[in-house]
Image (spheres, rainbow, N blue to C red):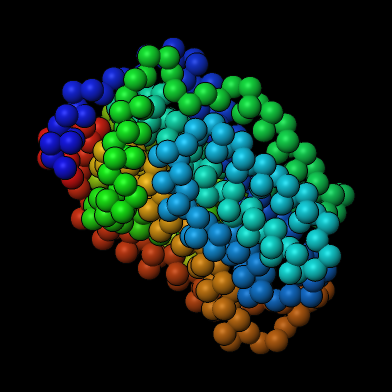
Length: 438
């Protein structure tokens, strides 16, 4: 493998695209991620009407939402291998079409079973959204700009996630959850048209892709998988991101319920607070990516912001009497600090040869999306000691119930810090630039 990497190092050519064109391509592709994050987090806006219409508990709601994660877990690794071999543009168009169609069907779902099937289909298409954006960013930007570029991509996603908070809540209250999802599906159609027009697989003069594709085909699937699985950075990076991403999965779904029942906020105020989690990530992703690029380091900022995430979460849980302004700041800070998770995407890209980038990112992303299964765990921990209280058809929980469930996150952050300690530093250099790579 060392000889293969060395020979490839001599053939690597950097993209010759104009910066404006590169940004147009990557940002247009990021609309897919934007859309996926919107439908991934939409349950925070429609959880109450869903629980009322289908007569389901918080645990069942968590399971319904987690069907997205199940599909991701099953398809992320194959998605990476597909992206290593097929046109990224075509894959995006097909995968996003599946997601948009599923949204329209979910909007008309007559039963919880149909809704679950649609949620699963959304997850299948969503398996390709971030992987395809990372794949394109690795072709259109040099390694020392990768973290910032991916940070911008993630910011696009979290704009979608923030729209799924207060704006979608208000829209749901105005026109109902079914009509809201129909509107979201229509937005998806417009985004598909933009992607079709703008996105291209490679910049002009980028010749390395054919050599990478030939290498991938020559090695075969089993050797590619073996190469990716043996690289511990892929596992540690995926674990770190999965653990730091839990506030998005958990507070993005149960946050409004928690803020209403424990901090006694109105539904609109609660959704505004949870939206700050996404705004913090929107700001933090490009900024922390830029910091990492400027430092020429990946592991150190992962450790620093991991510690800050842990401290912020403990403050939220154990300091009583937060005002609305304080809660807005806490959620903003938590989103900002945990956005350090985006560093792992260029880290994985830099830690693997070009011809397995998609597969390696697929493995890491599989671990990341496994975090969705914290949603039903959170619901189960809420209900362990539930006192059977129901108000307006919705179960209400005590502070002790929420703190028990919220304890998942500080434990996760500690484990994430352990993973970061053992990550191998890349110094922001592509794998082909390092003779000892793999």
